[in-house]
Length: 450
Image (cartoon, rainbow, N blue to C red; front, top):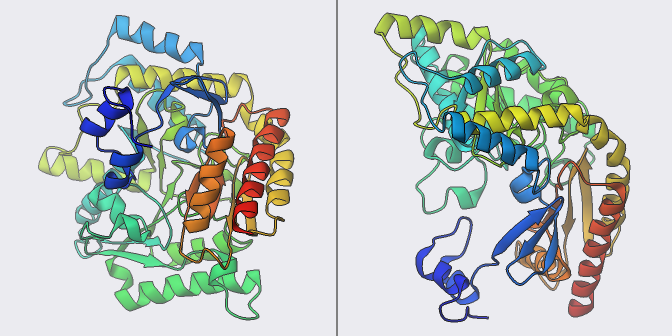
């Protein structure tokens, strides 16, 4: 339905270009305008309530309306609303947050560097890695490997890492030097008769074959999410990481763990790195770092990365990189309070306690006649759907997603996979309410298509 003249919806259509949207379709349909949020719910400007089953964009760990985060922002606004971190300058919140993140890292890390989004964090990681290669006298070591269906952001370099066609088409991406290896999705990528263990070993063999073909001396780093998010919530098969990591170590390739979605409790441990016993050289963090109340992201780098970078900055006189908002004092203060609340309320233990119910209901939804697979871990999951009458990629997923929204549940379809990633504060009763709505929506669509 076309927006009414002079409404906020019509003004949005007139002036606002939206992310991940068909712009022409948006001109006709208009936006869904959210007005307020409370707990796991958001309310549109007509007063309709929705369960935010995606925690915004995989990110609002503490839910909506957490007053302590608003108060932390206001206190810092009144004290020092902005300052930068260029040329030996800084402020308390960024120093305290850097210390906090390095101290809570699951593997030894040396320094934190602050950016404003996961995309910027991964983009900066690439620049750091290239700078390091030059510092080590290895200018040929610049190629980066990520994975098909991986998601690492939307800047030129980060979108190149991302292994999804719609992030490349019409953008002239990926850039040179970015390679994509096998996606660890057992159901869709396995060979006939191949067990999960055999598939995991083949993924590692595919990676090593690529490294050898390109020349190990030209490969700088491997980027990967512990659990793939926007590519469809793909949980790697058992043995995958145990097979992958030795290949990287054998060839001296840095490992970047993209924890933008997995970090701060989502997988049932504080970091996905802990869930899968990873040993990254760099971790990129965002989203639940501040519950997305303020834009902030970070890179944690170990001494193997920091040392050569520091030496090179001394040799040439500067590490010539930075953002106006790097370590913004208000964002850093909110992130510190957010982490304090996650620890005080022991939300990681809460996720562990709630996850069995979440996974039970996710798997029950995955038993529907329209479903082909349910997959998840902790409080993140997806159910993939298929029907012969809707063979186009995303056609059925889009229908189910729309039906869920009409029922009062916000999800996100990634093709035909519907994601579930609620705020970490969700209760067992609310998990049931969320999946009751999802089941009703799937039933609606099943009735429509017969």
